[in-house]
Image (cartoon, rainbow, N blue to C red; front, side, top):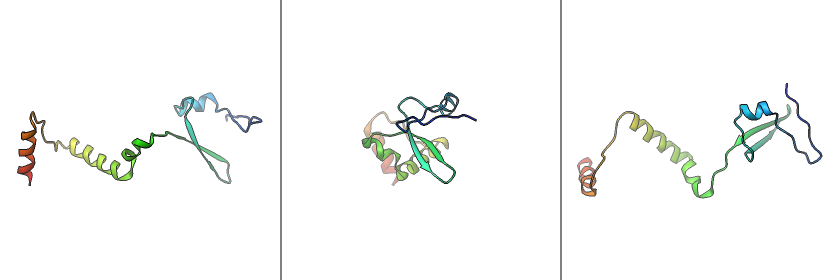
Amino acid sequence: MQLTRISPKHQITIPKEAFEKLHLEVGDFLEVETSEEGLLLIPKKLISKDQAWFWSKEWQEKEKEADEAIAKGELSGPFKKADELIRHFRKRR
């Protein structure tokens, strides 16, 4: 069992073993959830607001579809010129 003490400013020190096991870094954020049993600290990574679109549910579903298609070899190209790509798309209609 690892123990830590609450400081006068309500701060705690995460024991080194837990810190390393969770691959935490100085400056990381932790979400705090409370329950009848106690506190649950969940490591979180914050992203820049201008990158939030990439992590939306819809975008991640499309990323998964693309990864699966790539794994199956369902690829087009590469194309050396734009007109090759345009011809390819016209054939697919």
